[in-house]
Length: 370
Image (cartoon, rainbow, N blue to C red; front, side):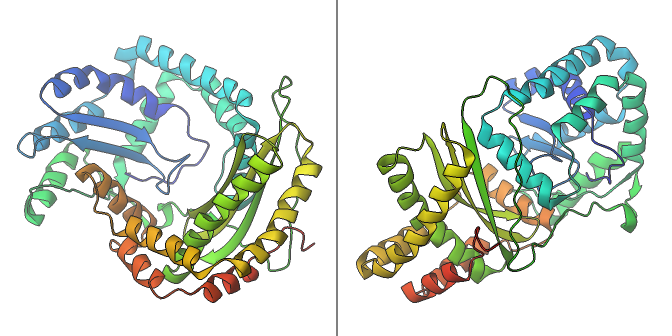
């Protein structure tokens, strides 16, 4: 259920979850589980995500029951629950300044490139002033016009699945979300050859560590790019940990990971240490320079092992219906609909050579290019 939000989203979803918790115990006793989350902060979706798990024969009843609770929610009748949720949410946002420094670094990168983006401080300001009446008004607005996207995995036909969604959403009396209000989640394109440096003090006055988060934007998410980036991260993460963590002993938090946000591929390097950021930045750049030689000198047998292990991982079957549903839902939310993505990536990996990986690495933007 998506909606284009006009302001930083306050704890409205949490309030609804508190009310639906009254239904949770009986559902779990019947072998059914559901969850209500606001996905705007951590997912490619922007809106309300409802997750239901359980027996095929009982699931339609659970879905209809929870939808009815949401449609008929009267916040004024749950004022005490609202106050508890508000207090907990405000406390949570206030305490986020005490997160590990690398988490603040990741948030700073997201703020620089993601649109729209609301900081923890902006969200806290909204949470502190939100009222039950505003939540009720938002609920009416939210349910009046929506974009409904669903993935159902189980022993159902397409007709049965469509019928279940249709019946479940009938209590809302909703209209399709107009095109202008469909959430547009975007990343800024960093021009080639441009390095953006952002420095900030940690919000936690008691913190002793520093952190450096290096974000290297690769380009649009295409199958071959994704395959090469994942392979590079698998090789680089091991070497980065061995060099910066084990040999240089910079700190316990050292990682390399691939990022696929809003249709854009990126490489993220992260180090947290008691050393100052300027020192850590030099060590990361030195590692990247040395890594080029490591790739060139890597024995073919070692390269083949990396490729084979990643292909094996991609060809693994989903271990549960829940995992398959999550994988499909990510494609739906991103509107990419590449449901066989992991098999496509495995196919590309089978033909990748060490030269291909080396060329891909050398095309990455340099953090010191400015």
